[in-house]
Image 1 (tube, rainbow, N blue to C red):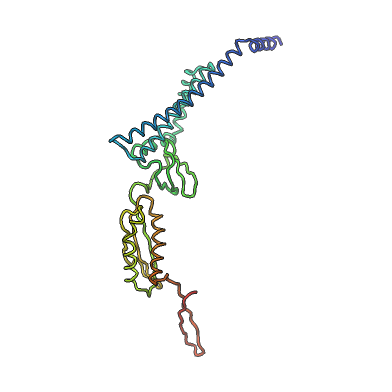
Image 2: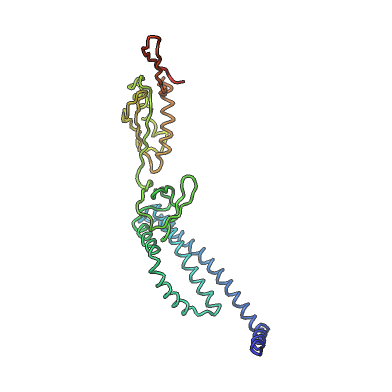
Length: 298
């Protein structure tokens, strides 16, 4: 009972001591100042990094905008992580926690955990080589396995990409084995146009070729005039013509839709209609013979 009374008296003495509350208030103010200064350092550091890249734009030694955006985002992330770590250590020192002993213990624990965190090490190493080799950059449209979309962020551990329908995919870098990048080389739009089997193929080819010659003047996404390759397939009711057009990276989807719309319109203007499915009807007369009748589907 005497022990509890001594403890109570000791705690009461400490909490009623004016110096105790002064130290708590001083530590609280220091922590607030550390957080404010760290936030200011992060904002200032990001502005300096962006300013550095703006100056590089006027330099004769330049790298691609894709790579600049990737390195810019990576440097901002590294700056944020380093400042947060230093802030955490300073707050621990304000709270009179032995940082050296804590770091030593964390080093031993980290060594033990490292043996079981091989996937994390693999993610970091793979992320480093992705950035070093410039396999893809922020803003590129890529396909990784079953995922396809625009790269939003590349980190040392994960890559974030946004699909065309708005989903956000976060992929560990270690899981990236094969990458298809649509944003580096020019794309190719491939369009198949169907005309009725009994139409004048020569007329259709001439009309389409004349129309394609002027398209690069109307659409700057086209690198060269589209080319009519000729007949691609022959079906019972239609002839399929194939057109290819070289476009700027990732613009082949848009140009493909434009080609289908405008070619269909110019064919209609020249009396070349779309192919209509046909069906064959068989009828048996009174003598048992079978008659065949072809009918155009309505």
